[in-house]
Image (cartoon, rainbow, N blue to C red):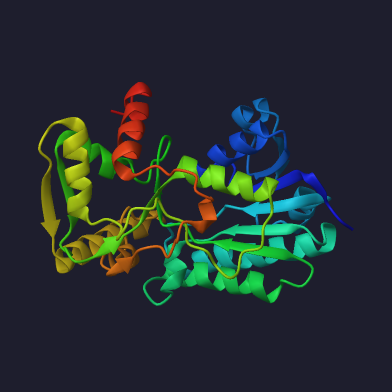
Length: 314
């Protein structure tokens, strides 16, 4: 059964990227059906059809993808207490969704929003789970049209994950790893949402996992972020660099303190390993964007900061 190209199934719609993407898909006149754990009046008000459930519920997944032309899988766990939780959400969740698509929307395009971390699965349990999710989708490619995107670190209006970093920059300091040679790519979330919406509306063949970024040659270092922020705010930004043993000890203590409460620690040893990985630069050659301009960190920082202030976060 061929799905309706005007209908899109979306996971992760209540998350940071997902909300941006749902808005852009609706703006293009597409019917969007989203998997949600609980009612979301904000999403529903935009005309998004809600399907209650999660990635462990096969009946909900079949209802989500029934008859759609494209599935965008943007849900995923980025912090967890143990590796088994990453495995359950990121790996087995992707496998279940792919099987549901094969049963109820054969021939649909399956767009997996993975992570640049999947390039180095040995770095952390999270990175390992993202690579394994890609492999699960690839193994089930028969009857699907899989597309895998590996975005780098995302930021932008509405993001709570990068808020502490941008808030520090706005206040004139930044606590960062002592790893001056390390480089990483960034991507403004609204740009990625627009790219994903374009790929849904105008499907095109993409060979292998693709790595979008903001087009900055050589990516960024922590000092680059401090200098960009200083230029935009007009105030000096002091960089406070912490060596790996200090951050690793802090992560160990955070894990130890969170364990009795069953909580997810704000910093883990896996995240420290990711922070000190020397090269998180995306391999984007620009062709993916078809010449469309992208938002550099200097501009994106200013726009995000304005949003934070308007919403009372700062």
